[in-house]
Amino acid sequence: MKQVWKPGNMIYPVPAALVTCGSTPERYNMLTVAWTGTICSEPPMCYISVRRSRHSYPIITEDMEFTINLTTVAMARATDWAGVRSGADYDKWKETGLTPVKGVNVGCPYIEEAPVSIECRVRDIMALGSHDMFIADVAGVIVDDRYIDSATGALDLEAAGLMAYNHGGYYEIGRCLGRFGWSVKGTKKK
Image 1 (cartoon, one colour):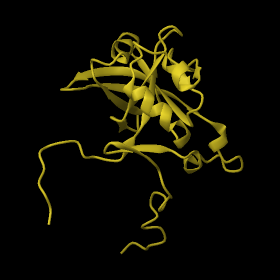
Image 2: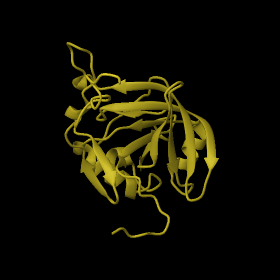
Image 3: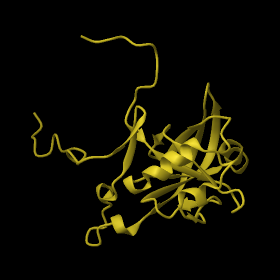
């Protein structure tokens, strides 16, 4: 038997990302964002959705840049804390112990402790309901070399202990069930 619920967002799990912004150290800030994802592969594009009431909203709107930092189990407390406290009231860098590093392709920082940081330039802002969607071009990707296999050059994010948000809770992402295409590998066309 199934229950029918009222309309709502039930697409879980989603990334528990820390988004960084601010073009000068005095304006550097971070916020926790679960409403984020890929829009397009060619050209590489992604999005974040942010409430207009968030301290970071005008910073991103003015600078038109942000960085999406993937989070790990080791970053769980900082990720939650940055999502429930405002940068207007706290220095989130000091309070979380995370380290801002000057961006490579954008003016805003990335987080040193993040295994992957995706630098973005805003292409468009869609005013929606509770959130506005920042549609962005990917300007660059910064990857921690601890997760790159030196022999193959392959990225092994499973070793990073990535974290996801799932209906009100944070969860460690589990074991790999197969790589893209594994379900048909070795099968013959009929």
